[in-house]
Image 1: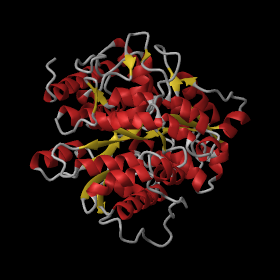
Image 2: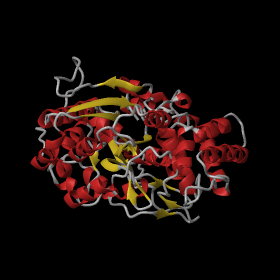
Image 3: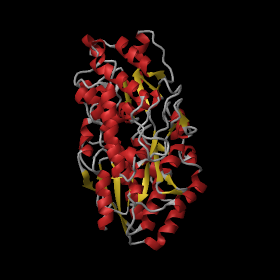
Image 4: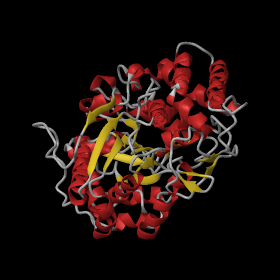
Length: 475
């Protein structure tokens, strides 16, 4: 979900320390500048920070896709530190580092962790809470609800445990798919708000022309976050799931999962579909679909709005030819599973300055502190809180996609399949850990190598059970 120039975030934990953000600074010639936003600290927060003057706080950031957004985030932290007389240190972390949760938990247990972090609520908050690494932040969320209305509906599912909030929604990241509307129009194919997976497969083949370097199917099943999302989405829309609705019992091995895996496997093994597969798709990482989409050789991809933001900010012609849509449906669901996720702030147990950490989080979620980050990553970084959408004209007029993005934050949840699975399901450390271990992509690789789908599903079910039991869920 990122471009090649930002690949380092995928390989390092704590890759860079920004240090004392009161110092000058964002770097290097030729790198994207932070958007010009006059960042201000509200007087109410200045008053709350008065007693914390001279304090310091350590922050861990899930590095953003857009470098200009990272610079804007730096600027917001810098302004806060200067205005409040505090020190904010920020380290960067890769969201796709497989050992990220383990490292954060080890630091909490050793008493060496940062005070707080922002991470994907869907992917990480459940695991961190299950490990006992997080502090209850219900008081902060309730204060913010009075100011900003409700957070995105998905956050209530991923950040709340036993009625208490353990993460503070920061900014909303929508889910979407993208197709080349000019290629579709050339073939007389309709542009719709969603499609079935079978329609997307067949349309991808129809618009493909390898001689013109047009490849209709820009999805991989190689180890990557994008592949995890693709495989899970097909399984869910076909009526399968990793776990039951409680998030505690593995139910992966089902006829519906086998049908979904058979469908996916056929795309990569049936010679009929070879013309629509781009070269090297079997070894793609998270940056690859972005690079190939921006190179204008793909007809379809699944991604967060990172690729859309990049095409817009860099004036890539593909932006004008992009049709974003909510996703695909399957036999068990007549509407896409599109409710996104939030990057959310968590305060670690044993934080040395939890009050300052909470204050920084309250500052970052709205107003000019968020606006610069949002402009640096258009449509990728969006308000999580309802009233923040109304705080600046940019969120209503900045891009044609904004109204649909805002509606996605309000999606009525859960969405229930014909097989009874309600998404988003209860936060499941077992499911999050199984996904992080790339068990789904490993399963698809075995199918491509010749394993029968039913056998691959059965063996993967057994591996998932082991992961759940390691998380404390007896099967």
